[in-house]
Image (tube, rainbow, N blue to C red):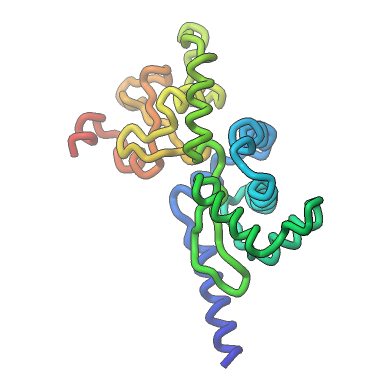
Length: 232
């Protein structure tokens, strides 16, 4: 009986790995390991100040073994694993317990730093580790900072906002990383750019001819005139 159960669990784990959403696929496509320093700076600047020491330790463990290790946002782990890892680095060991780890996980979920992403099994619970771009309190801090530092766009010097990475980010920031069509909150890894006037119909890669869109809406629209797609 146990052998049958183990085989079923193996099959479920396999299915879980194969079932990637469009957003996960887009994240992997856009993820660049060279952005890790920038992401860590965002975590330190915008997220860590809002966390307790235990929440910070748990979040960094999850981040280290998911996004930083293999460019994936999901990780399955258990309370016992987290307790072992954090206790080896925590000075106040008398305050460590399964309850304290569970409290930290709950706190991280409440502020949107992590999201429960699947059922719990013998290997633990599956979590999606969110980046500051996806966490509401971090987004608010980012927006307030961007308002104070954003300079007017000089289109004469910066004509290509589609192919140049730093220019793409300016369009995403202008649109608050939200899909123009369905209003879904996106990140630098899940967002795409859509041409208001398609290139095939004379459109260019200028700042004012690009809008932020999720992969699904961008694909659905195709080459149709933007008003036809919005109306539909």
